[in-house]
Image (tube, rainbow, N blue to C red; front, top):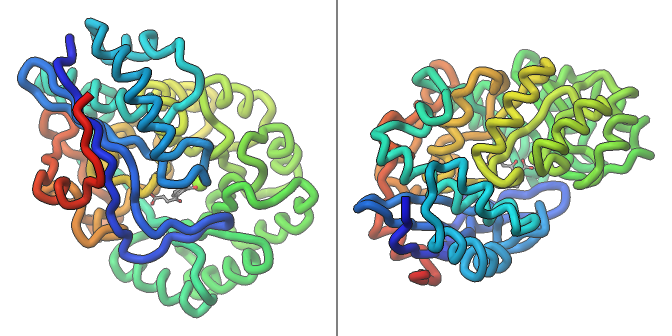
Length: 368
Ligand code: OSB
Ligand code: MG
């Protein structure tokens, strides 16, 4: 397949409410979307990097630069045999996984549409629905937190992830557990703790958490292994897993018992699938992480999350969790009876971009 032309869109959509982690706060969903045209079809991709390099070193600025100046020219020169061939093509570029993954998704969307298949079919997923949960940011007070969790539980979410940080982690897990003894509950430290906090983190074992996500450094595997040996709660790595090799190292070193898969973080959906397979072979469950995606990334995440070893509920909430209006014409709604989202079945992503809204939220659109 030869890609005829591409457009990069730098968009900014307000979040319904601020999203706060242990280390930063997001007020908007700012990111780069990729629109790629080939054979009369249009494919879409989403780069998950936000305005500021907080979660990782990538940002809107770096993804724009790497896409415009390197990845897009490479793809425009190439005649791709299939979507996986994209990875060999971009292999000369080091790092910049979110930029790579955004363009990869547009390529997958095109190939899937051409084959008349959904992404779920292309990736070997199955089933109409995927179990999901909600990620709850740090709130001004514990009372606000309890109210927020109450609201999501009332909406039908059966799994809640709390963003945690030192000073309020134990008390907030205790309050939520006390009010919701049976709720599927987990915590995410976003790399704010150190191995010297191991004694402190042991206190979280009392709350029957599904997992404790990325408590330690964003590139660390070694200290997480030391921590996992000391705590009962399963450690789940997010930030530290950037590739299939990182997943293998984490498994070999027993740094975690669960892996969070974010296709953007690992350089694409195809690599996310390989990490899924590796974890499955070693008996580690995985789940789909989230990066406040618009409906484009959300649709693709649902398709991959329908693979069998995604056995824990993902951070794939309904569109209304984050946005007053999502970028797609059919926003994702929670199936309240089973806390699931329905996987799109149409060709490719299976969603339609709302062009009028895109024009409103695009700060810059560039034909490349
Ligand atoms: O650490 O999982 C994370 C959002 C942005 C950056 C990092 C993370 C998150 C979330 C939200 O927890 C997940 C979502 O609902 O999209
Ligand atoms: Mg996380």
